[in-house]
Amino acid sequence: METLLHSIQKCSSGKFVSILFILTMGIYVGMLSYTMPAVSVFAPDFLLFDSLPSGYSFNYAYELLDSLGVDGRNVYLTTQLPLDFIYPGLFSITYSLMLIWLYSKTLSRSFKAYYFALVPFLAGVFDYIENIFIIRMINSFPDLQLSTVKLASIFTVLKSSFTMVFFVLLLVGFILLLKKKLFKTP
Image (cartoon, rainbow, N blue to C red; front, side):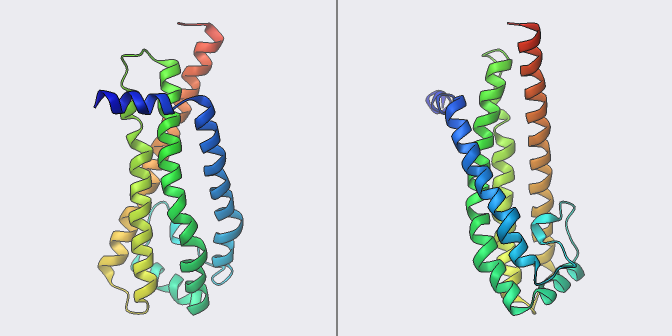
């Protein structure tokens, strides 16, 4: 276990994290600027499942999938979701390493920063599970199951919650780093 943690800490160099960050943000910008709008054009009055951090109801899911129509659902499956299967892995790795790097720069060596790395990792896992349920909803439409929608919504909320916790940890880490740099604390 100690060897694994040492390897993870070695990978969390500023240069490596920066490269991963650029790659991760490139995928994210691609989703925001191309794939999500490509799906949304079929149902302009609805937000996609991924964009609803507080979840969604069965009626909302049914109306969104119905509004997308066959072509919109196909674009969701073939354009948005393939990128959304790359992004959670990059998110998990990049931001786990970023938190380890950031907190290793600001807190004592004895502090177990790798526990914070679990937060973006879990956000990524929940994003993958959310995507699986979205595929299931699209493929089963119009025979949508209430349990499938509820589970998809739960995983959307979990993904969003852990993503928000990550950003809080990131902000706190940057504040600690700024404080350390400004006040030259050891």
